[in-house]
Figure 1 (spheres, helix red, strand yellow):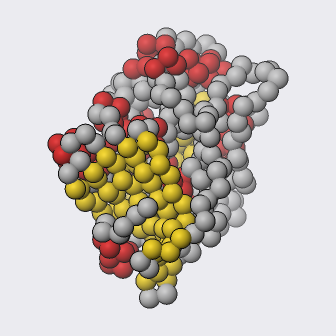
Figure 2: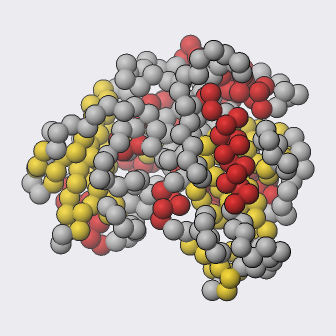
Length: 389
């Protein structure tokens, strides 16, 4: 990741954020992208500590300085924050520390809206905080609150920016000129940071055309960023209608997609990088609804086929490692009415048969999930042997 200093830090914890980004190094070996430190969004009186321009998202990182270290922080985007069970107080006790960051995020979203990129928010908390608790609704909206250790921050950025790349190096250059006119970025520099060359962009499916960056003042805007009262939702991409539900061995199929050999476009993180050098033969994805003792669960399945057992085993080993990315759930590209809002904190499992790897993620519908939930793990394990069509 390339770091560009545009203005002064607004919080003490911004130094920890900068140190974390610096530890990732230049280029896209770890993450890639361009970090704008001290960026001043239009219409705002103060800069934001950091804005990350990535090939697949823009991430706002706003620092929040607490009065003391804490073992536990309860941090809803709206409502009272609590430190170790005690209400956080300040000059204005009614003000939520996230309020200004939310406003800044909306201003950044407006500044980059022509790209169609999702805009996410990370609140970096300092000094040290041992555990942060967030409402599941905030997590589902792509908002993270954390103490910015290098590995923790990296995992959070990868998590909220989990989508197929959208910007080429040429488009990223146009966006960066708009955001910071005094800086210049060569195309080869941006390619080194993970932005693709336009001529090397993979073939696109007709129903999922990528949005293009247009100069300010262009007559038409291609794509739009859906910004609600706080931040864009995690779902991105096409709006093709879901297939008619079908029942299969206690499961109800909600949606399915045969993506052919377009695995790279539907992956993220280190898995996406690996797939760009190790072509798959075919990718298929499904959404299923299952029940456990009357409790509904959402099931995301991805099946990836390779030319042989060796690349399949390598892929499975990488995909099973936490923080390395994976295959984008179909939910993030097409709506699932009545289904889960995301697969955050899903129970995960996988298996392999020859050159085919199956990945399964399960979450509860309508209530919080946990990756180690025995019931969810049981559903995921059963799904490994489900006959899919």
